[in-house]
Length: 221
Image (cartoon, rainbow, N blue to C red; front, side, top):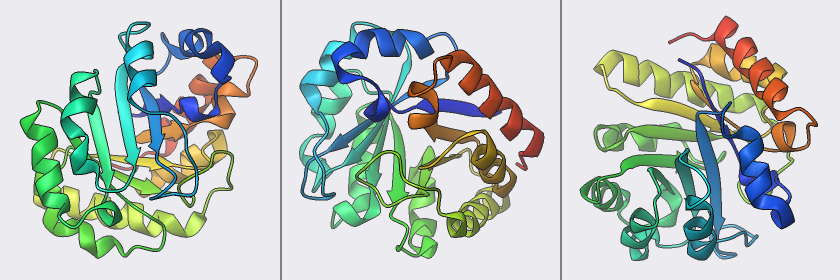
């Protein structure tokens, strides 16, 4: 099943509640990028914003922590209403420990890697994961171009999941639109993070629908 996770990093921050309402009934998740200016060269928003928008919607919060040493804040993000918490392999000395913390908090655990990180590092962590996020751009800024070479990583992860019969979703983030959604789905991704292509559209419902249809026609599980 293809799922669409609009990224609020690309929405109009002055109208965030209205922007979320535009996708509330049509998307599967709401992607929330948390950046600290250390792990990535940008600062977005953190716990106060999540606490605020949690009151406005029942959507599943797909929270992507692009922060240094995320283990310091897992409990707080869980209490604020995050449903899926994804950390970066590169952001901590002990990713397995942090994934266990997320699950102990009653949340789904995700792991992500930057484009330059070899996909092989994920294999021992997959039993602790509910989601794997492959970045198809360098993390830190929205609106970047899709890196096609990352599809080999998506295929590799999907192959391991299938071989080991894991129940893990494969998510891609960066440069996703109807065209690249089909490419990512063909490689084995079933959760598509889309920012600019959704929130820059006058018709968010159609943008989401077009991506979903394109991906469903190409998806290989």
